[in-house]
Length: 321
Image (cartoon, rainbow, N blue to C red; front, side, top):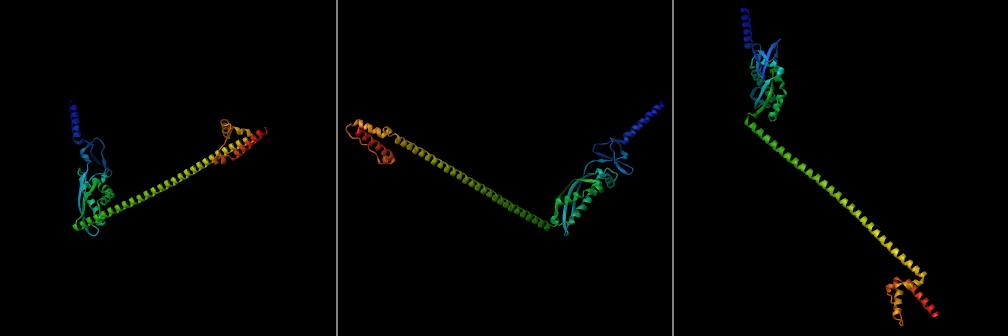
């Protein structure tokens, strides 16, 4: 019975020691321990608090108000704000600078401000005051941010330049006037470039329009030429048709005359003979007078002479009878 009580007491004591020594690791907490002279991370859920270092995985703010000098010993005031966070790849440097303490990040942030201040002074002393700008300073610091990781074990999360002004009011006014003149010059240059581009665009448009109008005129000339050629061909065809019709008419009249020459008795069937017969029936004792106009004589002189010959032959045969 006593052995059971002793075992129970030992178990209770061990449980109390475990409960007193071990803690549950929070998700946003870094837990470090030393092993063989190197700092390592504990990845388990439980960790012994007296043999580990824990601190929050948060950022630490930094703020710098620096009075520096540019080339020519001109004073410049620079205001910087930002934040740093632990660099997990360089945690050894963080512990070396900040110590084995939960405030290691805050101590490293103070050292980071000192290092950044030195970088800013180094940059401004090598630059002309009119060339200094927030963008150029940020670019220079971002290019050397690896020094913060290697030396201090922290990395820049955010970093901005709040102010960058010369300490001498006259220099500041001169820079403002210089910037104003530069902006006006750039604006005028942009306006002139815009006018030049507009003129070029208008010239190009006019050339395109002229080309289109020229091609349109050429097209009209070609169409008019084609139309005239078609009209000439049509007139020629009409003339040929008219000539062919007249040739057919002349050929018909020639055939008619040839038929009458071969058979004179057919003259009695012509309209002139019909009018003569009608007149002889109505006026038996009168002479029949046939009047022919000069136009009729001109158009049918051959027919008239033939008709006269037939009449003469008919009268002679009658007299003989």
